[in-house]
Length: 100
Image (tube, rainbow, N blue to C red; front, side, top):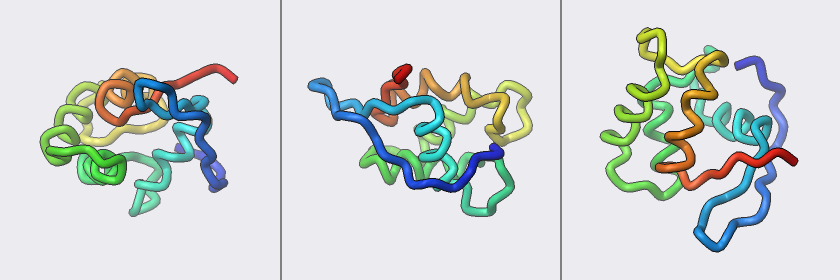
């Protein structure tokens, strides 16, 4: 994920409790959890994203998110697989991607 490090400002929180973000904001937010700076998200890093969002069962949800988004099966979510992560993010992370 070759993303410039900028602060991530989220849009309004909707009545259903989801935070609205643009795709670029989502990528920047996700980049905060790339602790080893390898431009990929591991299952543990995804688990931390779930945990940081107040999610329960973060280990299980991180594993499910990885399974749903890791298309090539290498154990990481890279730039080309971010789109696959969106469905998981909307269901589990409480994020809604909008086109602003």
